[in-house]
Length: 236
Image 1: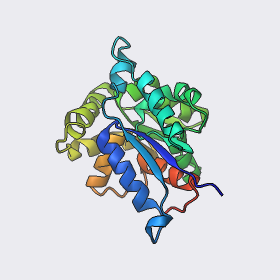
Image 2: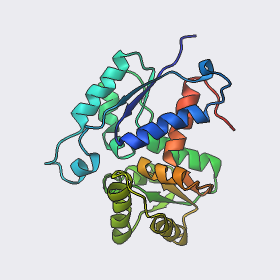
Image 3: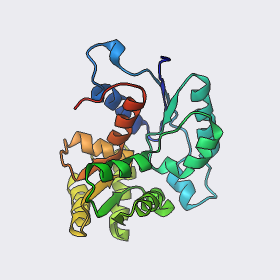
Image 4: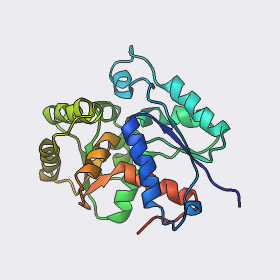
């Protein structure tokens, strides 16, 4: 059987991409080098900002760059493409049309993972960038699956954007107390689960050793699916 190769369209952001690569290794059930999945990673940090374009389309459009990056990965031999950036999935359909290999959808996979693990889930909290929220990426998938959802209020969204852009992306220590306060608001609002729908929030999830089944890291879900599609087992 032909070896399956994962292509990673990365750099959006760079730290989240590196963490995703680390996650792929640590989450694979492997006892030697050869048991891991082969990966082609393009950590292209100069891709224009996704949220800036979604909110103001006079800003540089990241789609042409991402389309070319996806084609580079396809030409290099990738069997699948993973994009470790939730906001970039605003462009998912156009990117999938640009290549003939499947692109994993982190948003579909994350909501599907929650509903499969907890069929009784009624409401999901969405923590994501202002661009992802404005695009209604998670809201549309939740609605299609018949699950209610909650998004941060305007003040909490501004605070979350500062944590993502002003702290994690800037290489500064995130305000974990504020981050947990926002999660608490989601839980108080009746959410059975809260999605970390921005891969910069995945960095906080790792660095502060969060171990809560009701807080679901979208990047972990993407890594799990990537490993399985490439024919390997995930560490249980």
